[in-house]
Image (cartoon, rainbow, N blue to C red; front, side, top):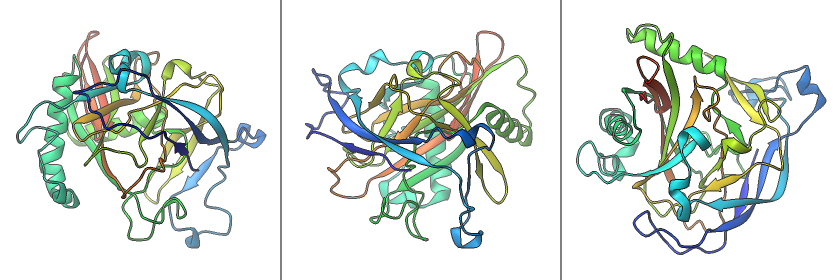
Length: 327
């Protein structure tokens, strides 16, 4: 699955100097084909080398390109979008120091997984507690650094030695049952009590490691434009040790797509993967989009976090790092 986005040349801006005009461009997105077989056979993808499987058995997912889709820049309208209404929002890291998401670690140290866990995860937790109102607790869940291989997208998964590549299809990271199972397993192993009666969320935190980001920016679909369940198709993402249920997405002409132009390292996209308050933007559809203005492969880091709360007025959230917040 592959998404291409052709951008007009943009002036470099940051949250410090917001744009005065809304930038709009046209893109081609790859959605899951709306095939009759998916009504009786669940889409799946097996995450092992293709040579280790019988021919044609790695996946039954078939995608199709939809061209000339309007993608709107967020730069001039940052404060119009919120997690609970749209499923995503943009925040800026103003803090500096060891718990700052901006400079908690040197660029060259991102290759050291131990340093990422020791320095970056606490910084993300601190960031979310400061930025997401009502966050009672935030817990690091998982971390992933994507470094585009020079041969991507010709080789969709890069080379054998590549870091994880940009995900090419329109998708949602967590289906409800999979989200609940992963969270329960994670928290039980760490001695947390039951989450019954508490609101919790899985949130993803996404930022480039340097900027401006013009190579494979993140495309976000406004939750209010999704026809659920018509647009969302539960699919199995199969690994040797676990099966995770995600959503593929069927094309709908009502879909409203957004991206952050020329994203800088202090500009952070926060978006939902799941929310126990189902009507509050719980399924965040996203995809990485390709820009031809790409002088060098970009790096970006993503965290899932779990957010936990107590009582009716509080919540728990999980992110790509895992964050828990309360509200």
